[in-house]
Image 1 (cartoon, chains in turn blue, green):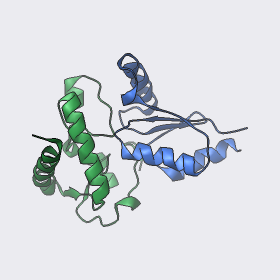
Image 2: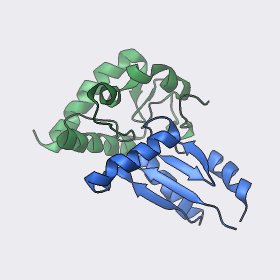
Image 3: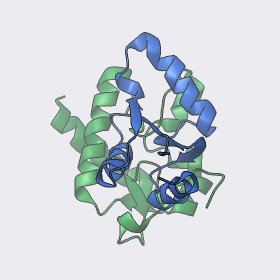
Length: 86
Length: 108
């Protein structure tokens, strides 16, 4: 079984870039969306989803195996990745 | 005013605003430069230098709370982290900004 990883990001946010880079460097497969570069009619819906998940408007919002982590926090990423196993 | 000039004027303005709050620009000059560039773009596209790492809702009263420098709106949270959310500003005693964790207000 592999980890299910989703990253909600902003293209203007360096911590979102660091988060995506961390998963890439760690060779962990992940999906991501830069909310601010989506077509305008999609942005609100996806942004609202990220806000609901995180309880705020801060990015990055990372969902690992259903667990939500707000902010660039490799230690927490590792905690939740271990939970699912590889 | 061109982007480069606007970036310099934001830097000049911010220094005078955040100092009395106990904050300074991050010692990571490359990060500061990148963030200021993003803010100039956000100002050009959306009318104000919004935080590059927080989302706008389009509701003016909400979005005002993420116009840089947004420290006063998030003071307790940022003081806990010793940095603002995007890391453009850190507490004046910070020398190693990379060591500062990023976590939401209900953690840490």
